[in-house]
Amino acid sequence: MPEGKITTSNAFPDKVLDEKALGKGESTQAVIHDIYDAATFEEAQVTYKKLGETAISRKESLSTAPALLEDIFYAFHKPVVQLVEAQEMAASHLLNRQMVEQMVSTTEFQELHHTTAGDEIAAAIATVGAGERMLQSLDKSTQRRINELARLEAQIQSLMMQAETLEGLADEQPDAQAAGKMARRAGELHRQASEAVTSRDKLAQKLIQPLEIERLENASRQAVRGAISQAEQEINDLNEAVKAYSGGFDNKAGWDNGGAGAWPGELSLNAADKVKLALRVRTNPKLQKIAEVCGRFTRIALTAQKTKVHQPPDEVVGIRTGDDLAHLVTSELALVADPVLETLFYARYAEKKLLQYELDKREPQGRGPIIVALDSSGSMTAATHDGLTREVWSKGVALALMAIARLQKREIAIIHFSDNAQVRVDVYQKGLASPVEVMSTAEHFYGGGTEYTTWMTEALKLVDRSAFNQADVIIVSDGEVYIPPAGVAEWNRRRKEREMRCYAVLIGETYGVDALASISESVTPLLDLTQDGEALSTIFSI
Image (cartoon, rainbow, N blue to C red; front, side):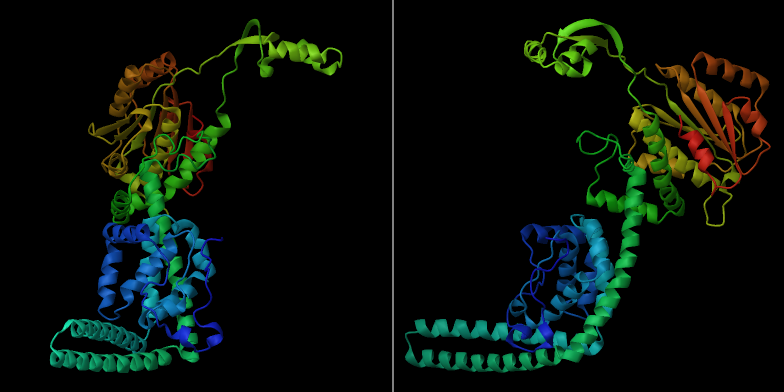
């Protein structure tokens, strides 16, 4: 059954008023659900507090608002939407059913439902957005009628319960006079309940007049379309934030993870942790911008690595017998082409006596750390027209390089440097870091001048500590650079000795090219952050 499809008839077919359309049942929920669904909704209200707060605040003006929000949540969260039959609905909640039916019939809902189904936080976000707009579409007159219907239904239920209680007591009462009095009182309560039912039905008919229903349908559809668009953006922002700071972009470039579940390094966050992470990002403009660029950078990085990753060739060390068809000697394959000798081939195959090459597996050599040197001078806060700063661009690169480190199980170090020996080194084994650690790295910034000697010393310490050669060093800077000749000589000596590769990106300026070229394989000037293709290609080719 397609997602979002409703599996019951319309609440008001052809706008014909009949007993079914009036809603004579007791159900206050329009979407069919189970105990698990209800528990998930309760949990979502706790985790995404805005959902619970909206339900409480809206109940003050509309008694059926909490039930509507719960129905909307079920519609977004469940993979298939099934509605309770109209005649089973309480009259006061029948309009909720109609609004939900209109919501799920929109193409916007169908598109967003692919994202929210099974995701309680995404469903909660969409529920608040859609629910608020739908409730706003109800005028005060409609709200008063619904509240009055709910009051009458509660009154009817109370009167009937009292009457049934008195009837039961009358049957058990040995005193005939007392029993008669109870029976007469029960009859009076039944009469009052009957009057309340008549009042309820008249009010319900006014609420579902054809023109009224058409107006409410149109208002509901218009409201939900705008709300879903807004909710979609908020959900996308949340997902981008979670992926950026928990390693969630690593499996988006078509890598085969062998059915092992989450990608290595991708943290499995519960709903509460996702909301906390997203809230921290939402309240920090810098973290927001880094999350925005991180997704694109990481996909580029992993795609670049995918195109270059290959299994080292195996070495042929001899001939042996066996049944490995992939490594047969060519002469054995010739047997299959001859009808006379084909039987011999199958006999040798069954006995594992086919001649085949013996191979020696060549394991890839371990590689040294990835070292990312980020200029933390004040000029890195210079921004483009869309608010993207040099600092944000460099931090997005750093997070993408962490994805490569996770992929290659390499140590990665992020070195923040400025002047006056200001330097901070964040080291992550195999590229693994908690969201708090990643956000701490992304937020850190000195804002001073530019000095290279201190960070280069720290980088060489990391290289010395590593058991492997072939460290990759990425430098992102924008300042005029001076490196003492002795520092250049020592760096290049160690570079050659430990097979280090060093690439530099010079943002916004060109007067530091010569100094950076003296310690790097290449320097890529990046005068415009919106034209970063060459720079990213160079960085992510490590």
